[in-house]
Image (cartoon, rainbow, N blue to C red):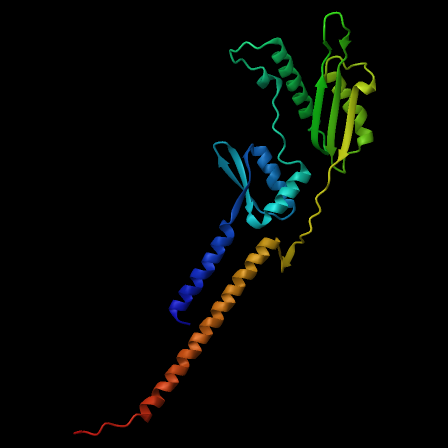
Length: 262
């Protein structure tokens, strides 16, 4: 095979490989290191290669363009990335600005709900936890104090038993919010919603001892197809050159000999 054809084969193969490896799409950005690791681990369970990239704003996660839809659905079912929450120290950090009592109360309620949500999110099987808090308040002078209340929303995986965990969640929330201890159960509403599990419709392709994702398998098929086409092209060029070499002596014999002196 001519050297020029070999160079062409190498160049085309390298271009296909680089195009397949470099086709990365940003999936998430501004993540913490722990959240990025959780995302990569979850995607690896479904044989999706994810790449972490450290940036000033945080860690970014990139996946192949053809895996972006599956990745979004997988992370949505898993509740990833987790919602960033603030704690009491961050909400009430010293800023030098004097807040009104109403603003201080609103900030306190928000920080309290964030703290309880963060605690509930640590329970195995909890995908999303949201807490809405109403603290005791006197609407107007002379009127009775409105009692405290709270509502809890929990989206959970199949490995969580709502009936078994609800009493413990009720005690945890009641003792975390002022005015809820000893109150009626109607003042603390807890709603459990099962999370829709992701059913991966794409099967892993087995190539000998290797397990490949559909994207990797498609890339290998493209590379082998290009190599096959180039090999056929090389064989055709070599056959054409061989035919031309065989025709040249025949043409030389058929041409009339030049007589000397003419």
